Image (cartoon, rainbow, N blue to C red; front, side, top):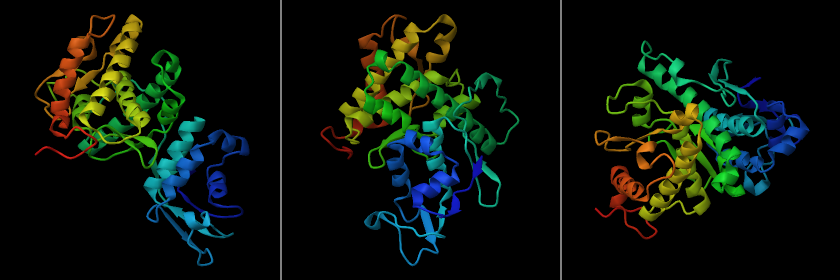
Length: 322
């Protein structure tokens, strides 16, 4: 089904309106559980939801988002997309979001299994390349999520970490590949990491391979560790802990994979800032059976420099030395 995030309250409140708009059964709503809290957090901002014909009442936390029958709800396009993503990911549905004029703006690819090698982007304009990249990366993220959930015992992932993995949503901002949002209680996957886009489009000779599912396994593991620490401070020690643990677990997945699957887990690790410095493969950090702690530390030291974390004050601060 397709939806544009604008509807009229027939009965009940906003959550009942969302349920009806998305065509969810009562059983599906029960399955969502804590997802409803995340959905409410999405529209707990006057910029994300407009309400008219509501008897002059302004729905917010103070009145438990009071709406009356015949009230007209209009979510912003970005907010509604995030809500639909939450529902799609939790229920494995494929609800599509449209603009208000009925043209399709975004499609969930939660159940797709893309193969980057089959994608020919050579003849596409730059914007189209990026949009193609986003759609395929979103598919890889969904695959990576399932791999992590299937390996939660092997990786020692807590239920809280699994909840964070299930909370992942998609957006496009200019500050890197992923981040943990403490206030919103979820992980964002951001697609404007220029280094990864260049890898995907084969436009940087220093990056020999395209990112595969293993890249996103490591990426999610890093942010999940931030989420579990629940500090959101990004000190040197926290970044080292998050990246080190993510690499160790990703290497375990690579080392135990069948020969036919090894390459997709042996993801490239592009430098975040110093693109000309090097491009290291996961396999370079160990002997194929276990990771080498010395090589890991060498990589982490350089990675902290490349990402700018070496310039940060250490104790509970996001300020810089200079």
